[in-house]
Image (tube, rainbow, N blue to C red; front, side, top):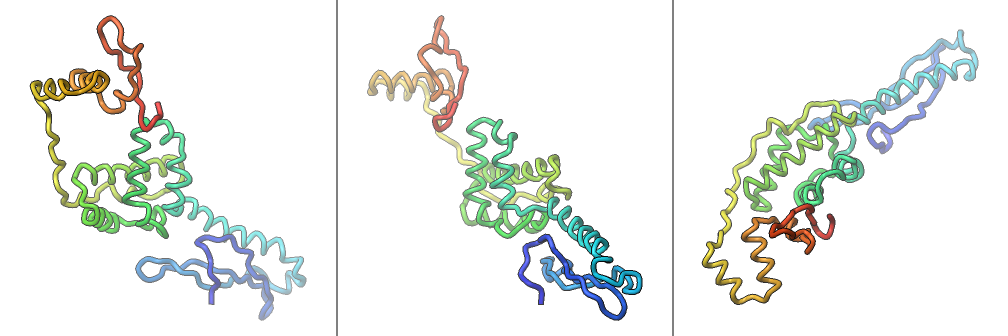
Length: 251
């Protein structure tokens, strides 16, 4: 019975002689049910006892054989890393993600934490097939009741992970989510837009600071992050100069 092993664990192997030959015993990965691999004991002959009478005579050949076995599995493992660890420790900490705007990186981390993190433990980049991604996206919509706009962002985030992984040598397969059809989801609800008389009525009952904030947001059409980045010196010669964004206190 094979011992518990992590996938592609480095092996030392076992050298022994039998029936006039030197044998190496090791474990090899074989396909299992539902495409889940399993490990089985295997052995190979690496030389005749008459040619290598002592263990030290065959030792270098034995070491070379095990190096070949381990190189094969380590290479495959590097092309198919665990999904959870890859996103947490590599992708979200990459220079690519760090160079994005704070609002985008915050969105990435939110998508990962809310919708994907707990669903992908135990999976590798290559183990989640298109049919699995289809079922996973459908389950996210059912569980969270999110709209079509949000599930599109979830799919785009996953696709970006695979694209980055391929371009940086962490994954060598096809992007499995590219052709996956988005599940049916509710349309994004329309937000109400105040008209000018309503805005003026609101500002009439507010204090000076609140009135100035609403006027800047309404009449200048600023986003929340642009509003948070405003400074007094940004206003000069009768104009607002938008030169920064602030998201959760980060410029």
